[in-house]
Length: 315
Image (cartoon, rainbow, N blue to C red; front, side, top):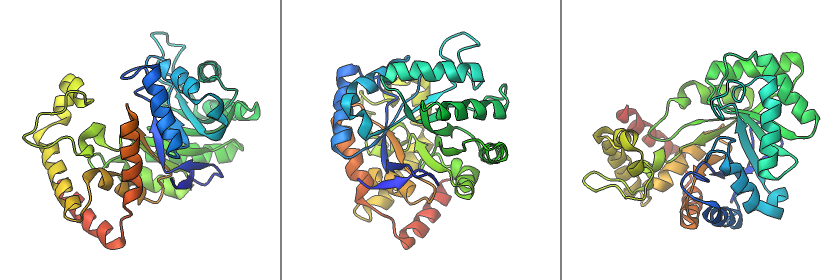
């Protein structure tokens, strides 16, 4: 497992990270422990969760699964999404950031968070208030680095300029949706990350399973897959247009002796600002498949150019 710097910071993270959004939602504590064990043994050092994942259970399961190994890994979590119906238990105000951090520390069973991330932009909270609160948490030793998630390009630039202007800790990372099938972030978010030294952490890199090779035109979707249990959202994702795109990408990869799973990781990892690809898993087998695929292929310059033509035809 290769390590990369998280943006312009000195923090090293594994180029494949484990997304723990399935913990408490699709798998229980014992399965979560098996997944964490497999990830740790495979060399994954970045474990990403959020206070709202699995109805607040994800952090608890992750902390328990890591146990004494916590000191050997990078734990990333997020704040800002609504915890419940209360207007005070969400967003990026100083009041909630401090409270949310304390709650995450308790659930994780740790006294510090390596990477604390704003889950969504909060237009109701002044940016300087958010950054000052996060800076205070760093001064207190409760947080080591801060990052963002789901910010657009101008918001990344605004946050970086504001932090520099006020002498506050800058965001070292941003976590956004990006895959071969969902490439909007490549238009302005990736250039902003490269310009400001922000590490990019793509989530849903396999398009909720579409890029694993399990979904093909004319085949019934696997019953245990995420998309089979997503109702209308799953049916929309499994549209004829998407399945046609998957078929084109599969053919391109297989013509080079590769799988579409390998292609999905290879394309993301060739992008300059990408520090780690956040991929979820519900079993040790998925961990091993992702680890193998993420290290199996490095695109050369000609493959990058040829793939760009293919991707352009899919728009």
